[in-house]
Length: 596
Image 1 (cartoon, one colour):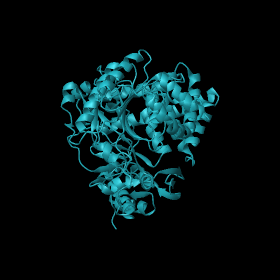
Image 2 (cartoon, rainbow, N blue to C red):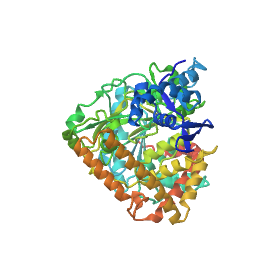
Image 3 (tube, helix red, strand yellow):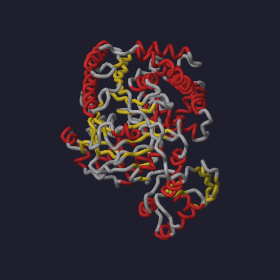
Image 4 (cartoon, helix red, strand yellow):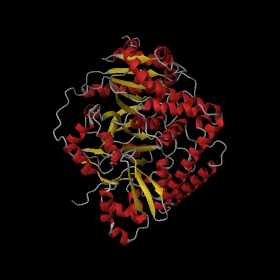
Protein backbone atom coordinates (compact mmCIF):
# COMPACT_ATOMS: atom_id res chain seq x y z
CA UNK A 1 0.00 0.00 0.00
CA UNK A 2 1.65 3.23 -1.16
CA UNK A 3 2.25 6.36 0.89
CA UNK A 4 -0.84 8.56 1.00
CA UNK A 5 -1.04 12.25 1.76
CA UNK A 6 -2.00 14.32 3.73
CA UNK A 7 0.66 13.39 6.28
CA UNK A 8 0.89 14.74 9.83
CA UNK A 9 3.09 14.13 12.85
CA UNK A 10 1.60 12.93 16.11
CA UNK A 11 2.19 15.16 19.13
CA UNK A 12 5.63 14.38 20.48
CA UNK A 13 8.46 15.45 22.73
CA UNK A 14 12.13 14.97 22.07
CA UNK A 15 15.09 14.30 24.33
CA UNK A 16 18.55 14.73 22.73
CA UNK A 17 20.83 11.72 23.15
CA UNK A 18 23.92 12.95 21.34
CA UNK A 19 24.75 15.07 18.32
CA UNK A 20 23.12 12.61 15.92
CA UNK A 21 20.23 10.97 17.76
CA UNK A 22 17.18 11.93 19.82
CA UNK A 23 14.61 9.99 21.79
CA UNK A 24 11.14 10.90 20.50
CA UNK A 25 8.12 10.23 22.71
CA UNK A 26 4.65 10.10 21.13
CA UNK A 27 2.62 11.79 23.88
CA UNK A 28 -0.81 10.26 23.32
CA UNK A 29 0.37 6.85 22.13
CA UNK A 30 2.93 6.18 24.87
CA UNK A 31 5.58 5.21 22.31
CA UNK A 32 9.33 5.92 22.35
CA UNK A 33 11.62 5.75 19.33
CA UNK A 34 15.20 6.77 18.65
CA UNK A 35 15.51 8.92 15.52
CA UNK A 36 18.48 10.10 13.52
CA UNK A 37 18.78 13.83 12.86
CA UNK A 38 17.29 13.54 9.36
CA UNK A 39 14.26 11.62 10.63
CA UNK A 40 13.69 14.13 13.43
CA UNK A 41 13.82 17.06 10.99
CA UNK A 42 11.25 15.30 8.82
CA UNK A 43 8.97 14.76 11.81
CA UNK A 44 9.33 18.41 12.83
CA UNK A 45 8.49 19.52 9.28
CA UNK A 46 5.19 17.64 9.55
CA UNK A 47 3.98 19.21 12.79
CA UNK A 48 1.97 21.26 10.31
CA UNK A 49 0.34 18.70 7.97
CA UNK A 50 1.51 18.53 4.35
CA UNK A 51 -0.95 17.98 1.53
CA UNK A 52 1.46 16.37 -0.93
CA UNK A 53 5.06 15.34 -1.48
CA UNK A 54 6.00 18.55 -3.30
CA UNK A 55 4.80 20.71 -0.41
CA UNK A 56 6.81 18.62 2.04
CA UNK A 57 9.91 18.76 -0.18
CA UNK A 58 9.70 22.57 -0.32
CA UNK A 59 9.64 22.75 3.47
CA UNK A 60 12.67 20.51 3.75
CA UNK A 61 14.60 22.51 1.15
CA UNK A 62 14.04 25.51 3.41
CA UNK A 63 15.73 23.40 6.13
CA UNK A 64 18.70 22.94 3.76
CA UNK A 65 17.99 19.36 2.74
CA UNK A 66 19.94 18.30 -0.34
CA UNK A 67 18.73 16.23 -3.29
CA UNK A 68 20.02 12.98 -1.80
CA UNK A 69 17.84 13.40 1.26
CA UNK A 70 14.83 14.34 -0.84
CA UNK A 71 15.32 11.25 -3.02
CA UNK A 72 14.85 9.09 0.09
CA UNK A 73 11.86 11.12 1.28
CA UNK A 74 9.09 8.58 0.46
CA UNK A 75 10.90 5.75 2.23
CA UNK A 76 11.71 7.95 5.24
CA UNK A 77 8.03 8.94 5.51
CA UNK A 78 6.92 5.33 5.18
CA UNK A 79 9.24 4.32 8.01
CA UNK A 80 7.81 6.97 10.34
CA UNK A 81 4.26 5.93 9.38
CA UNK A 82 5.11 2.31 10.18
CA UNK A 83 6.37 3.20 13.67
CA UNK A 84 3.35 5.38 14.45
CA UNK A 85 5.01 8.81 14.46
CA UNK A 86 3.36 9.93 11.21
CA UNK A 87 -0.30 9.46 10.32
CA UNK A 88 -1.93 9.31 6.88
CA UNK A 89 -4.91 11.35 8.01
CA UNK A 90 -7.28 10.67 5.11
CA UNK A 91 -6.75 6.94 5.48
CA UNK A 92 -7.25 7.21 9.25
CA UNK A 93 -10.53 9.10 8.82
CA UNK A 94 -11.80 6.57 6.28
CA UNK A 95 -10.95 3.73 8.65
CA UNK A 96 -12.80 5.44 11.50
CA UNK A 97 -15.89 6.30 9.46
CA UNK A 98 -15.84 2.93 7.71
CA UNK A 99 -16.23 1.12 11.01
CA UNK A 100 -19.90 2.15 10.82
CA UNK A 101 -20.51 3.40 7.28
CA UNK A 102 -24.25 3.99 7.58
CA UNK A 103 -25.22 6.58 10.13
CA UNK A 104 -28.93 6.70 10.94
CA UNK A 105 -30.46 10.16 11.17
CA UNK A 106 -30.47 11.48 14.72
CA UNK A 107 -33.61 10.54 16.62
CA UNK A 108 -33.81 14.05 18.03
CA UNK A 109 -32.23 16.58 15.64
CA UNK A 110 -31.10 19.86 17.19
CA UNK A 111 -33.84 22.45 17.54
CA UNK A 112 -33.56 25.77 15.70
CA UNK A 113 -32.08 28.87 17.27
CA UNK A 114 -34.48 29.99 19.96
CA UNK A 115 -32.82 33.31 20.81
CA UNK A 116 -30.78 36.10 19.32
CA UNK A 117 -28.84 38.10 21.89
CA UNK A 118 -26.69 41.21 21.94
CA UNK A 119 -24.21 42.72 24.34
CA UNK A 120 -23.89 46.46 24.63
CA UNK A 121 -22.47 49.17 26.85
CA UNK A 122 -23.38 52.83 26.60
CA UNK A 123 -23.93 52.67 22.82
CA UNK A 124 -27.68 53.16 22.34
CA UNK A 125 -27.28 54.23 18.71
CA UNK A 126 -25.32 51.09 17.87
CA UNK A 127 -27.74 48.66 19.53
CA UNK A 128 -30.72 50.40 17.90
CA UNK A 129 -29.14 49.99 14.47
CA UNK A 130 -28.29 46.34 15.16
CA UNK A 131 -31.80 45.45 16.37
CA UNK A 132 -33.38 46.98 13.27
CA UNK A 133 -31.02 45.12 10.95
CA UNK A 134 -31.43 41.73 12.66
CA UNK A 135 -35.21 42.02 12.74
CA UNK A 136 -35.22 42.62 8.99
CA UNK A 137 -32.94 39.60 8.54
CA UNK A 138 -35.23 37.33 10.56
CA UNK A 139 -38.33 38.47 8.68
CA UNK A 140 -36.62 38.05 5.29
CA UNK A 141 -35.62 34.51 6.25
CA UNK A 142 -39.22 33.63 7.07
CA UNK A 143 -38.27 32.27 10.49
CA UNK A 144 -40.54 32.15 13.52
CA UNK A 145 -39.39 35.18 15.53
CA UNK A 146 -36.77 34.03 18.06
CA UNK A 147 -36.53 35.62 21.48
CA UNK A 148 -34.43 38.78 21.43
CA UNK A 149 -32.25 39.30 24.51
CA UNK A 150 -30.24 42.46 25.23
CA UNK A 151 -27.55 42.22 27.90
CA UNK A 152 -26.71 45.79 28.90
CA UNK A 153 -23.55 46.65 30.81
CA UNK A 154 -24.10 50.41 30.58
CA UNK A 155 -22.82 52.56 33.43
CA UNK A 156 -23.10 56.10 32.02
CA UNK A 157 -26.71 56.16 30.81
CA UNK A 158 -28.44 52.76 31.02
CA UNK A 159 -31.81 54.46 30.65
CA UNK A 160 -30.94 55.33 27.03
CA UNK A 161 -30.38 51.68 26.14
CA UNK A 162 -33.53 50.65 28.00
CA UNK A 163 -35.54 53.12 25.91
CA UNK A 164 -34.15 51.47 22.78
CA UNK A 165 -35.21 48.05 24.12
CA UNK A 166 -38.72 49.32 24.89
CA UNK A 167 -39.09 50.84 21.44
CA UNK A 168 -37.91 47.66 19.75
CA UNK A 169 -40.22 45.42 21.80
CA UNK A 170 -43.24 47.51 20.90
CA UNK A 171 -43.05 46.48 17.24
CA UNK A 172 -41.11 43.17 17.26
CA UNK A 173 -43.47 40.23 16.67
CA UNK A 174 -41.66 37.97 19.16
CA UNK A 175 -40.60 38.32 22.79
CA UNK A 176 -37.89 40.72 23.95
CA UNK A 177 -35.85 40.67 27.15
CA UNK A 178 -33.69 43.39 28.68
CA UNK A 179 -30.99 42.24 31.13
CA UNK A 180 -29.91 45.28 33.12
CA UNK A 181 -26.87 45.58 35.34
CA UNK A 182 -29.13 45.68 38.41
CA UNK A 183 -30.81 42.43 37.30
CA UNK A 184 -27.37 40.91 36.80
CA UNK A 185 -26.38 41.79 40.37
CA UNK A 186 -29.49 40.09 41.76
CA UNK A 187 -29.08 37.03 39.52
CA UNK A 188 -25.44 36.70 40.62
CA UNK A 189 -26.50 36.81 44.27
CA UNK A 190 -29.09 34.07 43.67
CA UNK A 191 -26.53 31.87 41.93
CA UNK A 192 -23.92 32.55 44.61
CA UNK A 193 -26.30 31.43 47.35
CA UNK A 194 -26.22 27.89 45.91
CA UNK A 195 -22.47 27.81 45.22
CA UNK A 196 -19.46 26.72 47.23
CA UNK A 197 -17.79 29.75 45.59
CA UNK A 198 -20.32 32.52 46.37
CA UNK A 199 -18.20 35.22 44.71
CA UNK A 200 -17.74 33.32 41.43
CA UNK A 201 -20.97 34.48 39.76
CA UNK A 202 -20.31 38.13 40.62
CA UNK A 203 -16.81 37.80 39.15
CA UNK A 204 -18.21 36.09 36.03
CA UNK A 205 -20.69 38.95 35.50
CA UNK A 206 -18.03 41.66 35.81
CA UNK A 207 -19.21 42.86 39.22
CA UNK A 208 -16.05 42.17 41.23
CA UNK A 209 -14.25 45.43 40.49
CA UNK A 210 -11.19 43.57 39.15
CA UNK A 211 -9.68 45.09 36.01
CA UNK A 212 -11.50 47.70 33.95
CA UNK A 213 -15.00 46.29 33.51
CA UNK A 214 -15.34 44.74 30.08
CA UNK A 215 -18.42 44.39 27.93
CA UNK A 216 -18.00 41.13 26.08
CA UNK A 217 -16.88 38.57 28.66
CA UNK A 218 -19.20 39.68 31.45
CA UNK A 219 -22.18 39.89 29.11
CA UNK A 220 -21.31 36.55 27.49
CA UNK A 221 -21.25 34.79 30.87
CA UNK A 222 -24.58 36.37 31.74
CA UNK A 223 -26.10 35.11 28.48
CA UNK A 224 -24.56 31.63 28.85
CA UNK A 225 -26.23 31.17 32.22
CA UNK A 226 -29.49 32.96 31.44
CA UNK A 227 -30.00 31.02 28.18
CA UNK A 228 -28.60 27.65 29.28
CA UNK A 229 -30.23 24.66 27.63
CA UNK A 230 -30.92 26.54 24.40
CA UNK A 231 -29.35 27.14 21.00
CA UNK A 232 -28.73 30.86 20.68
CA UNK A 233 -26.62 33.45 18.91
CA UNK A 234 -24.86 36.38 20.53
CA UNK A 235 -23.46 39.39 18.74
CA UNK A 236 -21.69 42.64 19.46
CA UNK A 237 -23.81 45.73 18.96
CA UNK A 238 -21.72 46.79 15.94
CA UNK A 239 -22.26 43.54 14.00
CA UNK A 240 -24.74 43.70 11.12
CA UNK A 241 -26.29 40.59 9.48
CA UNK A 242 -24.84 41.32 6.05
CA UNK A 243 -23.19 38.08 4.92
CA UNK A 244 -20.61 37.70 2.16
CA UNK A 245 -18.26 34.93 1.12
CA UNK A 246 -15.05 34.76 -0.86
CA UNK A 247 -15.17 34.69 -4.66
CA UNK A 248 -13.37 31.32 -4.56
CA UNK A 249 -15.59 29.83 -1.83
CA UNK A 250 -16.43 26.19 -2.42
CA UNK A 251 -18.95 23.61 -1.29
CA UNK A 252 -18.07 20.81 1.07
CA UNK A 253 -16.50 20.63 4.49
CA UNK A 254 -12.96 20.91 5.83
CA UNK A 255 -11.73 19.32 9.05
CA UNK A 256 -8.47 20.81 10.25
CA UNK A 257 -6.35 21.51 13.32
CA UNK A 258 -4.84 24.93 12.57
CA UNK A 259 -6.00 27.60 15.03
CA UNK A 260 -7.71 29.72 12.38
CA UNK A 261 -8.85 28.62 8.89
CA UNK A 262 -9.50 32.09 7.50
CA UNK A 263 -7.79 33.83 4.60
CA UNK A 264 -7.27 37.55 5.20
CA UNK A 265 -7.67 40.11 2.44
CA UNK A 266 -6.42 43.52 3.66
CA UNK A 267 -8.31 46.46 2.16
CA UNK A 268 -7.21 50.03 1.70
CA UNK A 269 -10.47 51.97 2.02
CA UNK A 270 -14.25 51.86 2.00
CA UNK A 271 -14.35 51.69 -1.80
CA UNK A 272 -12.35 48.45 -1.77
CA UNK A 273 -14.49 47.16 1.08
CA UNK A 274 -17.68 47.74 -0.90
CA UNK A 275 -16.38 45.62 -3.76
CA UNK A 276 -14.90 42.71 -1.82
CA UNK A 277 -16.38 39.24 -1.71
CA UNK A 278 -19.73 38.07 -3.02
CA UNK A 279 -23.14 38.45 -1.41
CA UNK A 280 -23.95 35.17 0.35
CA UNK A 281 -25.89 32.73 -1.83
CA UNK A 282 -27.09 30.60 1.07
CA UNK A 283 -29.91 31.75 3.36
CA UNK A 284 -28.81 33.93 6.27
CA UNK A 285 -29.36 31.21 8.88
CA UNK A 286 -28.21 28.23 6.79
CA UNK A 287 -25.11 27.44 8.86
CA UNK A 288 -27.01 27.80 12.13
CA UNK A 289 -29.54 25.21 11.01
CA UNK A 290 -27.16 22.87 9.17
CA UNK A 291 -24.35 22.55 11.71
CA UNK A 292 -25.03 23.75 15.25
CA UNK A 293 -25.50 20.85 17.64
CA UNK A 294 -24.78 18.16 15.04
CA UNK A 295 -22.56 15.14 15.82
CA UNK A 296 -19.19 15.31 14.11
CA UNK A 297 -19.46 11.82 12.70
CA UNK A 298 -22.76 12.67 11.03
CA UNK A 299 -21.32 15.81 9.43
CA UNK A 300 -18.15 14.13 8.17
CA UNK A 301 -20.03 11.13 6.77
CA UNK A 302 -22.55 13.25 4.88
CA UNK A 303 -20.05 15.81 3.51
CA UNK A 304 -20.02 15.65 -0.28
CA UNK A 305 -16.47 16.96 -0.44
CA UNK A 306 -14.23 16.49 2.59
CA UNK A 307 -10.91 18.35 2.88
CA UNK A 308 -8.55 16.87 5.48
CA UNK A 309 -5.36 18.68 4.43
CA UNK A 310 -4.85 20.48 7.74
CA UNK A 311 -5.89 17.69 10.11
CA UNK A 312 -3.57 16.52 12.89
CA UNK A 313 -3.97 13.13 14.60
CA UNK A 314 -4.94 14.50 18.01
CA UNK A 315 -7.98 16.28 16.52
CA UNK A 316 -9.08 12.99 15.00
CA UNK A 317 -8.82 11.35 18.42
CA UNK A 318 -11.07 14.07 19.85
CA UNK A 319 -13.53 13.63 16.98
CA UNK A 320 -13.84 9.90 17.59
CA UNK A 321 -15.39 10.47 21.02
CA UNK A 322 -19.00 9.33 21.14
CA UNK A 323 -20.31 12.78 22.09
CA UNK A 324 -18.16 14.79 19.66
CA UNK A 325 -20.27 17.51 18.08
CA UNK A 326 -20.30 21.12 16.88
CA UNK A 327 -21.27 23.34 19.80
CA UNK A 328 -20.18 26.72 18.45
CA UNK A 329 -20.34 28.53 15.12
CA UNK A 330 -17.76 31.27 14.82
CA UNK A 331 -18.25 33.74 11.98
CA UNK A 332 -15.34 35.65 10.53
CA UNK A 333 -16.00 39.17 9.37
CA UNK A 334 -15.60 41.81 6.75
CA UNK A 335 -15.11 45.47 7.65
CA UNK A 336 -13.16 46.66 10.68
CA UNK A 337 -10.57 44.08 11.73
CA UNK A 338 -11.12 44.70 15.43
CA UNK A 339 -7.34 44.88 15.92
CA UNK A 340 -5.45 47.91 17.15
CA UNK A 341 -2.68 47.22 14.66
CA UNK A 342 -2.66 45.53 11.25
CA UNK A 343 -0.40 42.85 12.73
CA UNK A 344 -1.41 40.32 10.06
CA UNK A 345 0.72 42.35 7.63
CA UNK A 346 3.78 42.05 9.87
CA UNK A 347 3.73 38.49 11.17
CA UNK A 348 0.93 36.71 9.31
CA UNK A 349 1.65 37.10 5.60
CA UNK A 350 1.10 33.38 4.92
CA UNK A 351 -2.54 33.90 5.88
CA UNK A 352 -3.05 36.76 3.43
CA UNK A 353 -4.99 36.42 0.21
CA UNK A 354 -2.10 38.08 -1.68
CA UNK A 355 1.11 38.14 0.38
CA UNK A 356 3.25 39.54 -2.47
CA UNK A 357 2.28 43.21 -2.03
CA UNK A 358 4.55 45.95 -3.36
CA UNK A 359 5.91 48.99 -1.54
CA UNK A 360 3.14 51.41 -2.45
CA UNK A 361 0.40 48.92 -1.59
CA UNK A 362 1.95 48.12 1.77
CA UNK A 363 2.21 51.79 2.76
CA UNK A 364 -1.53 52.16 2.14
CA UNK A 365 -2.58 48.92 3.87
CA UNK A 366 -0.53 49.55 7.01
CA UNK A 367 -2.73 52.55 7.85
CA UNK A 368 -6.02 50.70 7.37
CA UNK A 369 -7.97 48.34 9.63
CA UNK A 370 -10.31 47.12 6.89
CA UNK A 371 -10.25 43.44 5.96
CA UNK A 372 -12.26 40.69 4.36
CA UNK A 373 -11.59 37.61 6.46
CA UNK A 374 -13.22 34.24 5.82
CA UNK A 375 -12.40 30.56 5.17
CA UNK A 376 -12.76 29.15 1.67
CA UNK A 377 -15.16 26.46 2.86
CA UNK A 378 -17.12 25.54 5.97
CA UNK A 379 -14.43 24.33 8.37
CA UNK A 380 -14.51 22.27 11.56
CA UNK A 381 -11.62 22.62 13.98
CA UNK A 382 -9.27 25.22 15.33
CA UNK A 383 -9.70 27.20 18.53
CA UNK A 384 -9.57 30.82 17.33
CA UNK A 385 -12.84 32.19 18.63
CA UNK A 386 -13.75 35.61 17.23
CA UNK A 387 -16.22 37.49 19.35
CA UNK A 388 -18.35 39.27 16.76
CA UNK A 389 -21.14 36.77 16.02
CA UNK A 390 -21.01 33.51 17.93
CA UNK A 391 -23.70 30.81 17.96
CA UNK A 392 -23.75 28.33 20.84
CA UNK A 393 -25.41 25.04 21.70
CA UNK A 394 -25.85 25.66 25.41
CA UNK A 395 -27.60 22.34 25.92
CA UNK A 396 -24.05 21.20 26.62
CA UNK A 397 -21.74 22.70 29.21
CA UNK A 398 -19.55 25.40 27.69
CA UNK A 399 -16.65 27.08 29.53
CA UNK A 400 -16.95 30.55 31.05
CA UNK A 401 -15.43 33.66 29.54
CA UNK A 402 -12.92 35.80 31.35
CA UNK A 403 -15.12 38.76 32.28
CA UNK A 404 -12.60 41.50 31.49
CA UNK A 405 -9.76 42.43 29.18
CA UNK A 406 -8.78 41.86 25.57
CA UNK A 407 -8.06 38.47 24.00
CA UNK A 408 -10.77 36.82 26.07
CA UNK A 409 -11.92 35.19 22.83
CA UNK A 410 -8.55 33.47 22.45
CA UNK A 411 -8.66 32.25 26.05
CA UNK A 412 -12.22 30.94 25.61
CA UNK A 413 -11.34 29.04 22.45
CA UNK A 414 -8.41 27.42 24.22
CA UNK A 415 -10.56 26.52 27.24
CA UNK A 416 -13.23 24.96 25.00
CA UNK A 417 -10.72 22.62 23.35
CA UNK A 418 -9.10 21.78 26.69
CA UNK A 419 -12.05 21.52 29.08
CA UNK A 420 -14.49 20.01 26.58
CA UNK A 421 -12.28 18.13 24.08
CA UNK A 422 -15.25 16.50 22.33
CA UNK A 423 -16.79 19.92 21.60
CA UNK A 424 -15.80 21.62 18.36
CA UNK A 425 -16.12 25.00 16.69
CA UNK A 426 -17.17 25.33 13.06
CA UNK A 427 -16.32 28.33 10.90
CA UNK A 428 -18.91 28.98 8.17
CA UNK A 429 -17.64 30.25 4.83
CA UNK A 430 -19.81 33.36 5.19
CA UNK A 431 -18.30 36.47 6.78
CA UNK A 432 -20.47 38.91 8.70
CA UNK A 433 -20.18 42.72 8.65
CA UNK A 434 -18.30 44.38 11.52
CA UNK A 435 -19.30 48.03 11.19
CA UNK A 436 -18.43 50.34 14.12
CA UNK A 437 -20.31 53.62 13.99
CA UNK A 438 -17.04 55.54 13.97
CA UNK A 439 -14.19 54.65 11.60
CA UNK A 440 -11.01 53.52 13.33
CA UNK A 441 -7.39 53.94 12.33
CA UNK A 442 -4.68 51.34 12.81
CA UNK A 443 -1.97 52.15 15.34
CA UNK A 444 1.71 52.49 14.48
CA UNK A 445 2.80 49.28 12.70
CA UNK A 446 6.40 49.83 13.82
CA UNK A 447 5.58 48.93 17.42
CA UNK A 448 4.43 45.34 17.86
CA UNK A 449 2.82 46.41 21.11
CA UNK A 450 4.31 43.84 23.44
CA UNK A 451 1.93 44.42 26.32
CA UNK A 452 0.29 41.03 26.98
CA UNK A 453 -3.23 41.26 28.32
CA UNK A 454 -4.35 39.41 31.43
CA UNK A 455 -6.17 36.84 29.31
CA UNK A 456 -3.03 36.13 27.29
CA UNK A 457 -1.13 35.46 30.52
CA UNK A 458 -3.90 33.14 31.72
CA UNK A 459 -3.83 31.27 28.42
CA UNK A 460 -0.03 30.91 28.47
CA UNK A 461 -0.11 29.66 32.06
CA UNK A 462 -2.70 27.01 31.20
CA UNK A 463 -0.74 25.91 28.16
CA UNK A 464 2.43 25.72 30.24
CA UNK A 465 0.66 23.61 32.87
CA UNK A 466 -0.91 21.28 30.30
CA UNK A 467 2.44 20.88 28.60
CA UNK A 468 3.52 18.94 31.68
CA UNK A 469 0.29 17.50 33.08
CA UNK A 470 -2.73 16.00 31.37
CA UNK A 471 -6.05 17.32 32.75
CA UNK A 472 -7.61 15.04 35.33
CA UNK A 473 -11.05 13.44 35.11
CA UNK A 474 -12.47 16.77 36.32
CA UNK A 475 -10.55 19.29 34.19
CA UNK A 476 -12.50 22.29 35.53
CA UNK A 477 -11.37 21.50 39.07
CA UNK A 478 -7.85 20.58 37.93
CA UNK A 479 -7.18 23.77 35.97
CA UNK A 480 -9.09 25.92 38.44
CA UNK A 481 -6.99 24.64 41.33
CA UNK A 482 -3.80 25.27 39.36
CA UNK A 483 -4.71 28.90 38.68
CA UNK A 484 -5.86 29.50 42.25
CA UNK A 485 -2.62 28.07 43.63
CA UNK A 486 -0.59 30.08 41.12
CA UNK A 487 -2.40 33.30 41.99
CA UNK A 488 -1.90 32.60 45.68
CA UNK A 489 1.88 32.45 45.46
CA UNK A 490 3.87 35.27 47.04
CA UNK A 491 3.97 38.17 44.63
CA UNK A 492 7.72 37.81 43.80
CA UNK A 493 7.24 34.10 42.96
CA UNK A 494 4.25 34.79 40.71
CA UNK A 495 6.13 37.64 39.05
CA UNK A 496 9.13 35.38 38.42
CA UNK A 497 6.89 32.77 36.80
CA UNK A 498 5.21 35.35 34.57
CA UNK A 499 8.61 36.79 33.64
CA UNK A 500 9.67 33.32 32.49
CA UNK A 501 6.48 32.87 30.43
CA UNK A 502 6.74 36.33 28.89
CA UNK A 503 10.43 35.87 28.05
CA UNK A 504 9.76 32.56 26.30
CA UNK A 505 6.94 34.12 24.30
CA UNK A 506 9.05 37.15 23.44
CA UNK A 507 11.88 35.02 22.11
CA UNK A 508 9.38 32.94 20.15
CA UNK A 509 7.91 36.10 18.61
CA UNK A 510 11.36 37.43 17.77
CA UNK A 511 12.18 34.15 16.05
CA UNK A 512 8.91 34.31 14.14
CA UNK A 513 9.59 37.84 12.89
CA UNK A 514 13.09 36.87 11.81
CA UNK A 515 11.58 33.91 9.96
CA UNK A 516 9.08 36.19 8.23
CA UNK A 517 11.92 38.42 7.09
CA UNK A 518 13.76 35.43 5.59
CA UNK A 519 10.66 33.95 3.97
CA UNK A 520 9.76 37.15 2.13
CA UNK A 521 13.38 38.11 1.38
CA UNK A 522 13.03 41.44 3.19
CA UNK A 523 10.61 42.83 0.60
CA UNK A 524 9.10 45.30 0.24
CA UNK A 525 11.64 47.52 1.95
CA UNK A 526 9.10 49.51 3.97
CA UNK A 527 7.74 46.23 5.33
CA UNK A 528 11.26 45.05 6.20
CA UNK A 529 11.88 48.35 8.00
CA UNK A 530 8.74 47.78 10.07
CA UNK A 531 9.91 44.25 10.85
CA UNK A 532 13.22 45.68 12.11
CA UNK A 533 11.40 48.30 14.19
CA UNK A 534 9.21 45.61 15.73
CA UNK A 535 12.24 43.46 16.53
CA UNK A 536 13.82 46.48 18.24
CA UNK A 537 10.68 47.13 20.30
CA UNK A 538 10.45 43.48 21.35
CA UNK A 539 14.12 43.41 22.37
CA UNK A 540 13.56 46.56 24.41
CA UNK A 541 10.57 44.89 26.08
CA UNK A 542 12.87 42.14 27.37
CA UNK A 543 14.49 44.62 29.75
CA UNK A 544 11.41 46.73 30.50
CA UNK A 545 10.42 46.91 34.19
CA UNK A 546 6.84 45.93 33.27
CA UNK A 547 7.80 42.69 31.49
CA UNK A 548 5.42 39.92 32.52
CA UNK A 549 2.72 42.27 33.79
CA UNK A 550 -0.62 42.47 31.96
CA UNK A 551 -1.31 45.68 30.09
CA UNK A 552 -4.33 46.37 32.31
CA UNK A 553 -2.32 46.15 35.54
CA UNK A 554 1.12 47.54 34.74
CA UNK A 555 0.62 50.12 37.48
CA UNK A 556 -0.80 47.63 40.00
CA UNK A 557 1.25 44.39 40.06
CA UNK A 558 -0.38 43.29 43.32
CA UNK A 559 -3.73 42.86 41.53
CA UNK A 560 -2.45 40.13 39.16
CA UNK A 561 -2.61 37.31 41.71
CA UNK A 562 -6.19 38.04 42.79
CA UNK A 563 -7.40 37.89 39.18
CA UNK A 564 -5.65 34.55 38.65
CA UNK A 565 -7.29 33.25 41.83
CA UNK A 566 -10.70 34.58 40.85
CA UNK A 567 -10.62 33.04 37.38
CA UNK A 568 -9.40 29.75 38.87
CA UNK A 569 -12.30 29.92 41.32
CA UNK A 570 -14.69 30.55 38.44
CA UNK A 571 -13.44 27.46 36.58
CA UNK A 572 -13.82 25.35 39.73
CA UNK A 573 -17.34 26.65 40.42
CA UNK A 574 -18.56 26.72 36.83
CA UNK A 575 -20.15 23.24 36.60
CA UNK A 576 -22.22 23.99 39.71
CA UNK A 577 -23.14 27.47 38.43
CA UNK A 578 -24.36 25.95 35.16
CA UNK A 579 -26.45 23.39 37.06
CA UNK A 580 -27.92 26.07 39.35
CA UNK A 581 -28.68 28.36 36.42
CA UNK A 582 -30.59 25.56 34.68
CA UNK A 583 -32.99 25.61 37.63
CA UNK A 584 -33.12 29.35 38.30
CA UNK A 585 -32.73 31.01 34.90
CA UNK A 586 -36.19 30.42 33.36
CA UNK A 587 -37.90 32.30 36.19
CA UNK A 588 -35.23 34.97 36.40
CA UNK A 589 -35.27 35.55 32.64
CA UNK A 590 -39.05 35.93 32.66
CA UNK A 591 -38.64 38.87 35.03
CA UNK A 592 -36.80 40.75 32.28
CA UNK A 593 -39.53 40.37 29.64
CA UNK A 594 -40.19 43.76 28.06
CA UNK A 595 -43.90 44.45 28.01
CA UNK A 596 -45.32 45.59 24.69
